[in-house]
Image 1 (cartoon, rainbow, N blue to C red):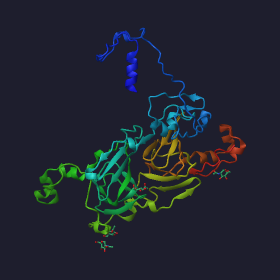
Image 2 (cartoon, protein in one colour):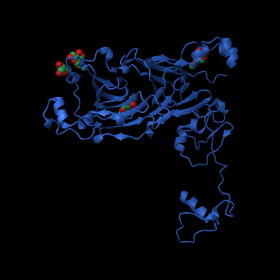
Image 3 (spheres, rainbow, N blue to C red):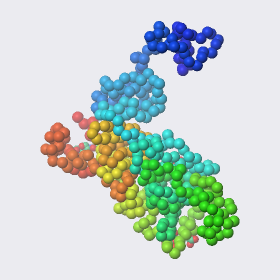
Image 4 (cartoon, helix red, strand yellow):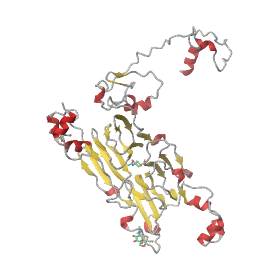
Length: 459
Ligand SMILES: *[C@@H]1O[C@H](CO)[C@@H](O)[C@H](O)[C@H]1NC(C)=O
Ligand SMILES: *[C@@H]1O[C@H](CO)[C@@H](O)[C@H](O)[C@H]1NC(C)=O
Ligand SMILES: *[C@@H]1O[C@H](CO)[C@@H](O)[C@H](O)[C@H]1NC(C)=O
Ligand SMILES: *[C@@H]1O[C@H](CO)[C@@H](O)[C@H](O)[C@H]1NC(C)=O
């Protein structure tokens, strides 16, 4: 295609066309400058690109329904009478899964921050000998996500994330499989526990810990309380040993220097290990200080917490009210049934770092005074909604949508637009928003969390 175009350009009646059989020079001649007689019109038609609008695409742009371009013959950047066809160049794969980017709702306006990062575009770091991998989202790829950063990590059966610590706090949700986590706190108290899919852990800044996959391997999500966090910059056990004089190590541990002959020269990071004993008590090292007291432990078996059912799905929250050690990270795991939507809301005390686990979604980020951008999300995508900026999260697929909302705060809180308006004197609402009495009568004073959406198409 490209070379055909090049040939047709060269075949135009250019004054300095190269003689047949010779290779044209790298640059053209000054005769090609503007006003030259060689100016011609392309013979390609770009105004008859065939396309079939998808449902909702010919609605007035402010209706803004999700446009499903997944199976569209030729998705076009058009809504109602706005936009126009796209003759290319383009990558239709992006357009098909980001229809709100290609053909935004008419209610979008201006430019907000970028609130989307697909982990699929993150550079993977591969572990040693087939032991796993890790990929991250931080300020490098999402510059406005300043408060939190995230890592998606896989450890094959028996593999370790090396013993380490870091400046940030670490909150984790196990996405698949199970692992054994252990830590030692500043009092010398020890902690060891097994966590599996749906469970949560939290390590405060500076607390050294390690993670080893059990027999089924593990994948987990890590959220750090610092947007600049990088997995490449943690304090590793191998590195702290490698960078002490051997004589100092010997003195420190009261051991002969030879004991350190074989310590690794480089970090191991993610590496295969000896399988953990099935009986966790065999790895329960307890010194005089004893174990970390129960109310301060670093894990919460969130998988065993039943979800709170709401109209269009379910919600469950874990924060410092039930998991005290997690003093600065709160989270909600939300399920939205097809047709449903996490209601329009905002978080008054924190930015939100979001991870999409299954299904598909879209969200409109609204920023004062009048900017709004709609983003589409798939599993493995990160979302980011700054403090007090409103957003909804709508299920745009035909299966359940599951996602995680993470806040950097001690308690999970949100303000519901529906509850606020429903709890405001009706006269004020009518004067401000010009809603008819019939609508005022149906406003709700309770927080919905997730709405079913069954009445959205009523007359
Ligand atoms: C966990 O991984 C296994 C193996 O790929 C897969 O069959 C299963 O569906 C995964 N579970 C979840 C919750 O994704
Ligand atoms: C570890 O040992 C302590 C007592 O030494 C005990 O209280 C604790 O339950 C044990 N933990 C596990 C996981 O076996
Ligand atoms: C687990 O290990 C502990 C400590 O070694 C031991 O006392 C206990 O009997 C073991 N439990 C089982 C079920 O093997
Ligand atoms: C539709 O509205 C009616 C009347 O307010 C309400 O009872 C019902 O629960 C709503 N249905 C859905 C699916 O939202």
